[in-house]
Amino acid sequence: MLTRSSQIGEFYIMSPPQVKPANAQHTCDMLIYDEESDRHVRIMWADALAACCIETAGEEGGLDGSSVPGNTPMANPTDDMKDKNTLGDWYERAKAWADATGKDNPEFGEWDGLDKDIRIVVARPFIEHLMHNVIMTVSGRDTGATLFGPADMQLSANTQVKTIEGHVSARALAPSTPARLPTTARSPARCLPRA
Amino acid sequence: MVTKPQNVLIMRDVACAGYVAGMNTTFFARNQGEKTYSLETARQNIQDRLSFADDVGAKYGSMLAFPATEQQLEANQGFDTVMSVTSRLLPWELTGPNARDHSSFPGGQAVYSAYEKELGLSGVHYGEDMKAAENQVGPPRPPQTRTLPRTHSHAFSLSARRISSARDPQTMPSAFWVPTASMTRLLARL
Image (cartoon, rainbow over all chains, first blue to last red; front, side):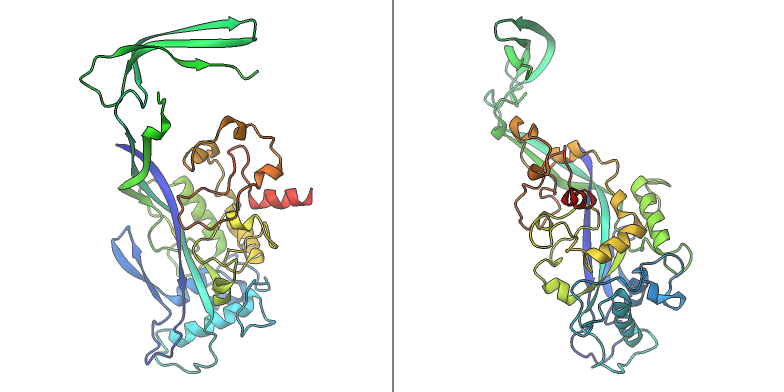
């Protein structure tokens, strides 16, 4: 079996509840599969928000190191953001959801004041697996041949058309014909220079 | 030696032979041993992961987080099924009024630029064997296509269409020419 390392990526979109729940706790979180531990893991909205590393978060928001500037303009802001379309403005609205659905706030405070269009994208861009691959062929000489055994190659110069021709002779066996005797393939390949 | 290519079928990734890395639930940006985050940590952890700096079986980060809105999902150029976190653009980002922008990135081009600067996302494809990548996508091209002049009029000849799978052809019309975001913006100014 042919095996190669194959890499893919995926992303999830975290979304706050669109309808007011009776108990707000964990309603912004998501559960995703962890292949290394073979279990589903809860991703907290507050953790994902902190992992965005927006300057506005500060130390209180879990930031300790470099970040993206809070005045960076966002494309497609929410309707509530209107003219306030920076990452800092987005962070304030996302932080309000973290406060409303955090462990210490089991009940909603000001539901109407929360921006329901805030989202967080969580991406796993470098998922890597070893994957099997298969090559299938139609049996018979029509498909081609496997060259094996002693081979001979001859090169000749055709001075009239100014090309160099190569001829290969080898023992050939068609795919999936183990019981048949091999035949000699004459000039199965011909190479010509382009200029 | 194949004399009738239509008799040959290559099936890629038909079965999983084993997990390597990248699918746990650790944020790249999380500082080790603490519950704090920074982009410089993310940058280092991404480099460690892609180069397997410790060991192939070691514990690496897997996740990135970006700010987004429902309005971007609803927008025509939104990231409904696919997005690019590297400098490589998606096929439909090569044309249209906002061509050569990371419009599918959460928050748009400005947010991408801010994160790219801190995370070094343009370095993700460094060292990639473009010819090998080209050979793994799409049918083989006739020799005439490979010998086209390397001008951007050919480089952007891809038709804009949406893809839903990472296995679909990438945004590279040829291994000789890979349109990265920085390169396309540079060409636009020429």
